[in-house]
Image 1 (cartoon, rainbow, N blue to C red):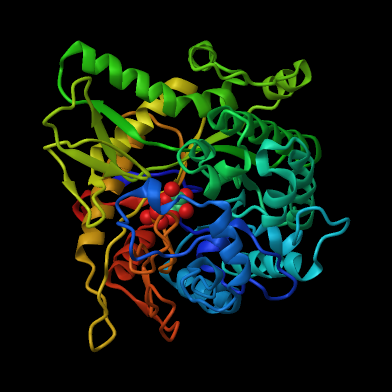
Image 2 (image 1 turned 180 degrees about the vertical axis):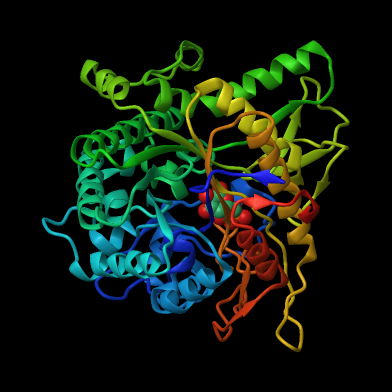
Length: 490
Ligand code: BGP
């Protein structure tokens, strides 16, 4: 029997731009997510190309109000289906629901004096609906959807002024939902700015012709750290019961073999992953990162006050997403390439891979938990883990996703072992996702993660009807054990 704390939060995770739709309803402004479309002509495994957005693409997005390819404008219409969706998830037995706030629902251009009441009320209704079923809301404030206005008029996160606009957005939402929400995550995968600067932080390379774009990205990263610390400060000063998390994409990079050169290289790459949580948990820039910046001729402007703010307002817990691992080698000639979440590495011959080429590594989630726990001695929270697959709906409206059940079973068992044997302090575990939704990286609908199938294709055609998959009933069984899970379940 695996035994968990009675407050352990089993849940599911989503984000506003991937589920809500209703992109221009009730006063919502245009966000960067509304400028991302599914482009069938680009190989979805080429994540760099898929995520590339230039000024021309943005102009097209602004003009084109009809084309269904702007998939995140339509999502799976959670905006109108939220009661039905939450009811189905409650019946599955979840104890936590992670979702994000659409910034442009609250401040359509990001700069308004007062918030859009209809936007605030939507989220208030969502949290009230969750509480009706005793479901704990886990709220991400910014998950890849900043106001487009700030991109076109303020140079996005490169501009310090955006910190102030974000702070106003964040504190408005925190105040409004303060009676209902305890767990806050200021930024989804704060490290992702390096891999997809537009989707994460609205940075468009051709808007900075005179500057070193790498420096632009890292300076913007610094501004997000400051913004995040301001959220920590605000919550700690005003609502001591709240907890604020740093969230990273936990990629695990193994050495391809025991050649010490490859071991060293994996250590270096892991430092790139940890740099972000190091700053948010320890409160200062690690020397290895500062040295790397100097080497690349990257000079960040960081004031004394900002250094103090970072140091005094560190995060309470480490939230992370985990999907797969990759290998690394100094000499890669002749080695097969493998993919992971918006990154790539050397293929690991011991692992299988998903239809989208991400390698499946259940032991890697346990390794991640041990590493993070040893590094920070702080509570951890798995806020994303799941399998993207092209599910098929049968004639009788069923989905036999035994491959997803296998994936989750193997990963969850490793999570339970990490808690039981390795002594990891874990607050909860959320699958990505809940119902199917639009893929963050490829903008496809056909890359499905949910327990509930949504009838919609990559071009926005479908009924939006929801159908429970086999995995829904499997997760429901797990929930019913009430944190005392028999080993035979695995
Ligand atoms: C994470 C993001 C999510 C999500 C997930 C799966 O990095 O935080 O928004 O979508 O990855 O990725 P994808 O949708 O690209 O398959």
